[in-house]
Amino acid sequence: AQSVAQPEDQVNVAEGNPLTVKCTYSVSGNPYLFWYVQYPNRGLQFLLKYITGDNLVKGSYGFEAEFNKSQTSFHLKKPSALVSDSALYFCAVRTDYGGATNKLIFGTGTLLAVQP
Amino acid sequence: EAGVAQSPRYKIIEKRQSVAFWCNPISGHATLYWYQQILGQGPKLLIQFQNNGVVDDSQLPKDRFSAERLKGVDSTLKIQPAKLEDSAVYLCASSREGHYGYTFGSGTRLTVV
Figure 1 (cartoon, rainbow over the protein chains, first blue to last red):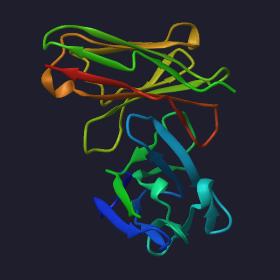
Figure 2 (figure 1 turned 90 degrees about the vertical axis):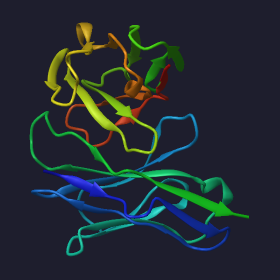
Figure 3 (figure 1 turned 45 degrees about the vertical axis):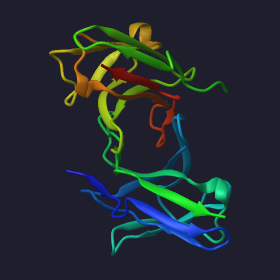
Figure 4 (figure 1 turned 120 degrees about the vertical axis):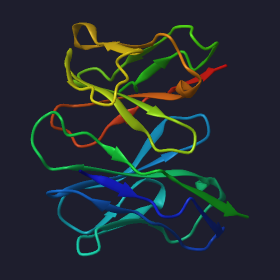
């Protein structure tokens, strides 16, 4: 069964410093990996995805993520954090199996707090 | 393109009452999903529709939850009767057939008292 782990409930970082939000996954087959962000009282917003190709994926708002197959990880990164980046971040995975039953599985989320 | 629309945004009901949520997906999106997000947890898939057929409802508590997607467009999710543990945000999402990512609505926050 596929699963996603986000080992940190919360990440604290000072504004201007680099940030990393960790994600590891477990799937049978090739993974499709996603990061979503959720602001208070809002739905999930898509940040970026890895499907195939270059292991470094660039997304919205200056975020990027690196796919590491040997470590089964897909950590989210940003070179310089902003206070406005403070939100709940979710990693998600689905497999490359064909068919319509290919659902997205989410991690438990990591709260990012950026201090001014 | 317009996003995924959900209503209501908030709902407070007493336990054992019934409630219904509505979702209008992005036009042309064949697949529609309902997720339940309990506070402090990641979203959990309740049901997935492909056009107007159910593809996956393995985690839907069928004794109290039901969902339908008439004509392959709008969808409703119903809870009857509600329990305290149903308090959560209910998220609707849609995707194009064969597309990799989902677009989520803003969700309905349900509080059962």
